[in-house]
Structures are given as C-alpha cells and as structure tokens.
Length: 222
Length: 242
Image 1: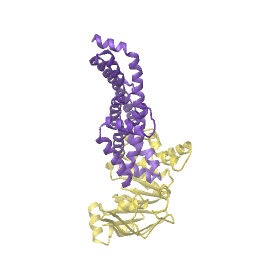
Image 2: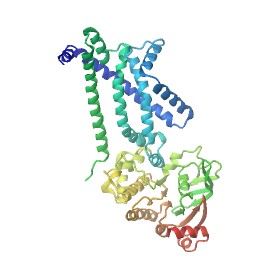
Image 3: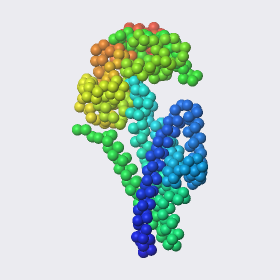
Image 4: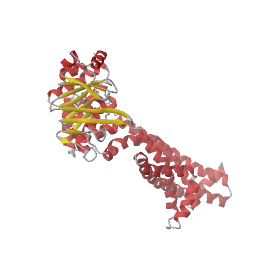
C-alpha cells in the first residue's frame, strides 16, 4: 500500500499531464466520432443502396477488426502519405473506430422515433432536412444518450492503446514509469485508479445530463 | 378545392385505391366512411402527398393547381393543407405553444412574436390557452387532439384533413374535439373527415362517401344516405356501426 502511495506521489506531475492528454485524445476523437457516426447513420437510412453499402462495409470492417490493428494500420499507412503527429493519428483512428459504433447508435435511435413524428412535420410543410433537424434529431439524440455515454466510456479507456504510438497519456506514462522503477504492479494500479476516477466522473455527468433532459420535457406547469 | 380523377395507389402488390374520383368544393365538409382497410386513410394521405399516388393516376388538383408529385414542390402544397392524425403526433420535446409556432416560424418564416400571438389566439380558440406552457405528455387525449388542430390551423390552411381524429380517444373526450371541428366547419373551412362518428357526419357533413375495397361505392347527402342506402354493402356497414 505504501509503495502505491509513493509511486502516486513520485509521479503525480507526469500523471496529471498524462490525464490531460487522455482527456484531449478522448474529447477530440469523440467529437469527430459523433460527426462520423451521424453521417454514416444517415447513409444507412438514406434509402440509397450505394450509401447504405458504403456504411455497411465501414461498420463491418471496423467492428470486425481489433482497435490496435486499426491504430497501427492507420498510423503506418498514413505516415507514408502525410506526416501526421502521433496524437492526431491516434485521435483519428479512435474516431474512426468509435464512429462505427456511434453510427449504429444514432441509426437505431433515429429509427426508434415514431413515423408519425416525421409525417406530422412533413404535413406542416417542413422539408425533410428541417424536420430531421427540428423534430427527429432532438428526440433521437435524447434517446441515444445512455448508449452514447457507454460508448464514450469505452472510448476513454480505448485511448490507452494510443500509448503504443508513443503518446504519453495515462497508460503510456505508466509504461515508462514502471520501466524505470521496476514496480509494475503498483504503477499499473495507480494508472488504473486514474482511469477509474475519470470514468466515475464521466458517468456522473452523463446521468446529470439525462436527468436534466427528462426534467426539461416534463416541466410541471401551474 | 380538391379534384381527383382516377387516383390509384398500390403498396407493393396490394392495390389500395382503385380509380378513385373525388371532388370537394370550397367550404364543403366531406365525410369518408367505410370498413377498416377500405382505403379511407390512404385516400386522405394522398391528398397532401404523404403517400405518393401511383404514376398513371390521372389527375390531382388542389386549389385549382394540377399537381405533379415528381416535379412540384410538395412542401408548398402540404403547408396549405392541414392534417390531423388519429394519434395526434404532437412533438413531445416541444411545449404546446412551441408545437403550434414551430411551422409558422421555420416554414413561413414568421417573426417569433407574431407566431406566438397567433398561436395564443388559436389555443384560445380550442380552449387551451392556459396549457400553452405544458408539454404534450401532460395533456389528456382530447386536449392533445385540440392542440394538434391548432397546430395545423397555424399554417392557415385552405383545406383541413382529419384522419379518424377521435378514434384513439376515451369516449368522454370525443365531444370536445368534435365541438372544435364543428366550429371550424361553421366558419367555412373546407374539410375532408375520415370518421366513424355518424352524429358528426349527419350534423356537419355536406356529403358522405362510403368506401369499400379501394373504391367509393356510394355517396350522398348524410341523412338520405343513412336512411336509404342504395347498396347492400353500405347497409351492412351502416348496420354494424349505427
């Protein structure tokens, strides 16, 4: 126990910096993943066979291969075309990875909205894009929050693999530290705690958001 | 106001509407009745192009304008034709007031203050001004349907279509919705109503049309048609619901 605390104290600066890096990686990749996910969700529901097939191929390949393979493939593939810093290569790979799962989350939640909503919107003269933006997506997004929150947590933890591209996020920092102090058990324990705390905070935020959105809708009037 | 000639609509191999002719004059209230599956709702939904008629359908003209669903701006036409659904289809994430102002603001590009003023007047008209800030899930079925009517009226439609507006309501809530519809009819709104409310048809309807297996098989003035139906099929249907 004392060894763990010692390692915690010895490395707190490095881990604090690493936490920032993990959060940056997660945030950048998830924002990109949401955009990718939304685009491919629309491909799937577009009714166009070509777009549907493109989305289906993307989702199948991404879900069917390990993240670490995608990460290495992208990093060493891209490096031959453009020089991309490891951080951005990692963020991009994570985004492409999460995007496939988020596409399915968005598709499911959009399709779960009652058909009558779109019909009512169209019957008022709204165009399809306007009805999507004003009527369907706000409801679908709210319905997607629990699944999205789950995906975000997975994304946060998956960002640890970017350590293998040489990015000093939490896991990468632990990797270096244990090589120097010869105490892998204690060092990884500390790294694990950092992730755990981040995930707990994140879960709490998602729950808050969910609560706030459901209160907004059923605000009691006097 | 509405002129339809030889309208056909199929879903896959299912031929739902067969050479339907329908014309509705200004200020007229037409009531469509018929067994479920007879094509009433589909006919109604073809009038504002929620369903696109089969190509080869002869002619649909709305307000004197012949419509080609492939080329014309259907959004424009839909904004002139109000529709009220059996299951209300209010927007659950928007307040009652926002349900009514949504289309005027985003389709008609009305200023928000003007849209709110108009919406409040319409809500007053359907007796729900005090519910403006409520959300749909806090309303009874009858209240929801009255909001849905106000929402449709907010686009100042020339024609109102009602698709079984009272079928999903508890019996004691039917009256309040019919009352609003009667007032609309009295004001001279052109209406096409799919309903099983024979009292309403008799009191407000100018013409009743009976549909069966995708065709209009009989039509006439309500009292006359209810008392002396010509076809056996009509008699049978009426005896089931009266």
